[in-house]
Image 1 (cartoon, rainbow, N blue to C red):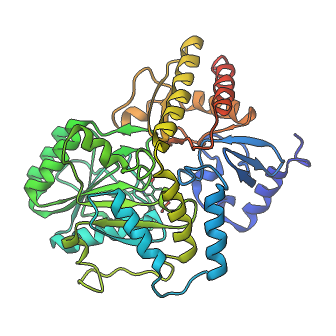
Image 2: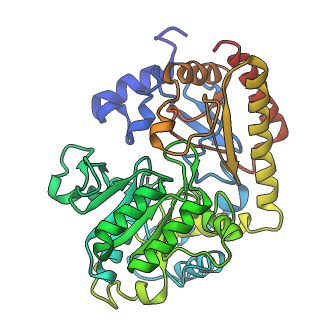
Image 3: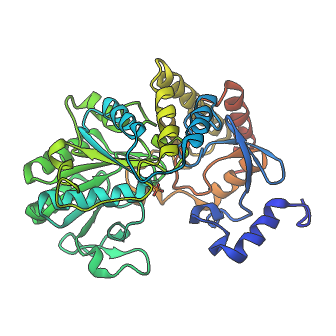
Length: 434
Ligand SMILES: *Cc1c(COP(=O)(O)O)cnc(C)c1O
């Protein structure tokens, strides 16, 4: 396509004049893979059409929220009805209560929940709550896990366990991350050492139980068990960031997946986002009644939001949750995701490409590595230039996966057998080029 007819390129050139990098969230700019971002014109079901009118099978789905595919009729109807009743009131509504009840019903570890507008806000508030409830300052997070862009979480490991982290962004003063300890994912020895050294000062351990921000890496069951035991023993709160995995890997989130192996397993705090808004800005955090009652107006931990519990967003989220809790929904979604992953594995094997992949519910990840990595340094051993060839090969064939090798992929209930077959067939062609 020549520059004069490529509408994506024209829009990108225009966008860069007014918006930094031409995008409102950095990964959209295709910096890691090169080339021109696709500007989306409209979407329906498993597809979106870009500014050139080209159709793509969408495996990002807004980075997770679109679990029903785009434009699901029941969700569209609920949103249309809500819009007619008013956009925002800054006063409580019945729908917020309904959504809160729905969430608590699906996630038994949560006895109370507060609604906010983004995953960043939810994780940030959860940490303030954990600190307020325990009267402690220190946090544990893991390298490769993302919890939004609150200052205290934009941090990488320091030089040793006795020292705390260094900021990963300009504009974050070192003092702001001095209480954040960054550990290697799935490393039990490091975890024990950290609690040994800092146990009485640790307010909370925050983890992505299945990490989707380093592609797809599961916390092993023994590692998770250790996290739970050490938090309990030292009086720290175990905070599950399920912004990505909540209502995505299973109806009860990743915590229900761990509870299968560890009966009675529960985190103390859960952070939710993405699927609970069904594509509208909505997120939440919750936990036990005793902890949640520390929040204003009941308790001393301040937290607030002009658009929190927005009536249109809650309508969208409620309609989405009511669809995914229908009998058989997750069984069918999981089967579809597995068939994609199995198809990709077979295609890679026959092309002789080193490949490993994993999935749970409607979330998947794959690596151009012979074995699944267990932590961030291992993920980063993936071959970036081969991934870029794969990414652009698929994109040319109308298959849209994340434009970076450290991001998970998402299948929706709108992805048909034919969509999966088309994807696997495109991958078979592209693997031969690697
Ligand atoms: C997306 C994400 C966030 C941040 O959510 P936003 O709505 O983008 O602020 C936090 N944690 C995890 C695990 C996420 O995947």
